[in-house]
Amino acid sequence: MMDRSQKYLFYVVGEVEKRGMPSEIALLPMIESAYNPIANSRSKAVGIWQFIPSTGRLYGLKQDWWQDKRRNVVDATNAALDYLQKLHALFGTWDLALAAYNAGEGTVSRAIAKNKAKGLPTDYAHLKLPAETKDYVPKLQAIKNIVSNPNQYGLYINSIPNKPYFTYVEAPAVIDADLAANLAEISYDEFLLLNSEHRRPLIRTNEKTQQLILPINAADTFVKNLSQNEKPLVSWNIYQPKRNEKIKTIANKFDMEESDLIKANDLNPQKSIKPSTIILVAKKEGTETNANQDIDESKINKETKSENSTKPNKYKVKRGDTLTKIAKKYGLSVDELKDINQISISDIQIGSTLRLQ
Image (cartoon, rainbow, N blue to C red; front, side, top):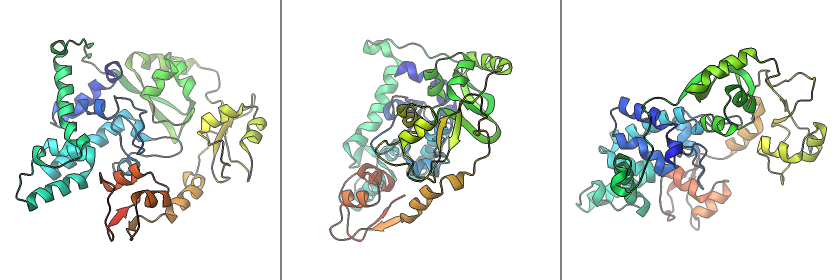
C-alpha cells in the first residue's frame, strides 16, 4: 500500500495543503482503498476515494462506457476534497465531516438530532454511530502516527520523495492503451495505474487531442517516440452488433478469440448483446479504423438511457417492503441503496421516501 501510495501522495498532499485542510486527509485513501485507483466495493464505490456512482456524478466525475472518472486520481481527489469541505461547512468539525464521508450525511444528521432531543452533547465522541464510523477517525489518526514516526512502531517506510511523480502529456485523440505504454517505455500495469479511468483497451475522445498521465521521467520519451512512430496508433474498430448476433459469431467475423472480445468489452457471456450498443472489435490488417470518427454518445447509449429513465428517482416505502425487495425491484444492491440514501441500517419506515438514483 505504501509503495502504491507514493505515486499519488505528493499530488494529494499538495491539494490538501492548498485548501488549508488537515494534513491527515491525504491519508484517507489508505483507509478507503489502500490507495488503489481500481478498487471496487460491494456498493459499487470506485477509486482511491471510493465514490458511489450517484455522488461521483454529483461532483462531476463522468461515468460512461469509455471511462470512469472516479478512477482518475486527479479528478477524484479534487471531487473528494470538494465534498469533504462541504461536509465540514455543514457539520462544523473535521471529525464529523469524516464521519459523514464514511456513513453519509443522513446518518450523522440523525445521530445529532437524537442527541439534541435528549439534551446530550453532539460532538463526534458522544454520537451513536455505526461501529465502522466510530473507528474511522481513530483509524485515520493511527495511520498518521505510523506514517509520521514508523520507527516508534517497529516499522520501516520508504521516504516519500518531495517531488511530483506524474505529469500530463498531450496524446492523439485515439490511441491503443498498450501502444501508449510502449511509447512511454513503461509497463502496461504502470500505465493503467495512472490512467485507470479508461475502461477499454482503446483510449479515445471526440476532441482533437487528449491528456494522458505518465511518470515525469517517461513524458519526454513518450513525446519523442510518438513523433517518430510510423505504425498505426489503433488496432481496434467500433462495431454495432446486429440483432441477435452472438458473441461467438462476432469473434469469428473479426478473427478474435471469444475471451479477448469479452475482456475488451467487459461482456457478460451469458447475455446477448443489445443491438443499440457498441463494442470494440479487432481491426483487420490493411484496413482503416473507424475509431477516430466522431461518435454520437447519446445515440449509442440511447437504449441504456431509456432503461434508466424508466426507473423513478424516488420510491415511497409501503407496508411489507424491505430494502432487499426494493433494491431487487430497481436493479440495485442493498449496499448501493443504503449509500444512495446515506442510511446505515436496514430498518425503513412505512411512508418514508428512498432515492433510487
